[in-house]
Length: 236
Ligand SMILES: Cc1ncc(CO)c(N)n1
Image (tube, rainbow, N blue to C red; front, side):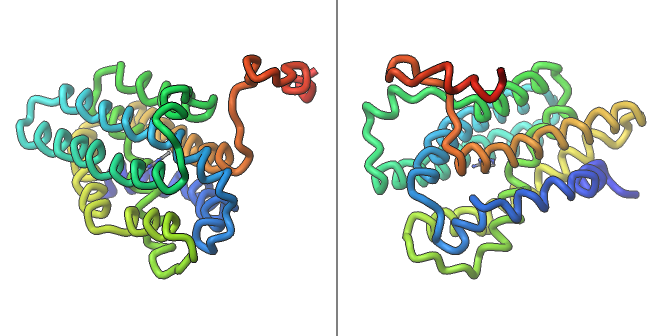
């Protein structure tokens, strides 16, 4: 029988294809992405991954199966250690100072994605939680597969590709898919429908994350004298 993970992946395929083709992803592959875009993205992503690691602790609290608790905490710990290391080396390469990081606030799209994850996790059901969390490692794993033979000139892009084409990410995807399929094996049709929708929502936020990087989108900065009227002019 087809598990929930396979069903959700199929239903989100059109959105995933948009991520694969996104100019931000293609720009990393070909080494043509502007460093200002990557810089914006990587700060948002350092915030994202830190919260994502914390969310694994909350996911672990939603099961009494000791093996599942251990797997989720281990993945969360790996995220906190491994990926944050990448972020730190990239921060250094891009000259992002401690002071700049202290002043950092998540942009609307990063904030919305993380808020969505906390919202779903707060429902307290592991199946729903994994539906929300899974597009993150899984989409990046598939992007890693597609980019692994690319040789962009910049070392930061090479390192980024290496991170997401590692065996670790593949293992994590398989472990979490199995946990999700198992947690959902007795789910009703309505619950399956909810979970595939949650997976689709996260997939949509993944797409927005690339777009946020590509367009440098952020809150209007009144402190810097940015004209808030300009910011809203397209809405009037
Ligand atoms: C936004 C986002 N999604 C997924 C991953 C994969 O860990 C990441 N680093 N950032």
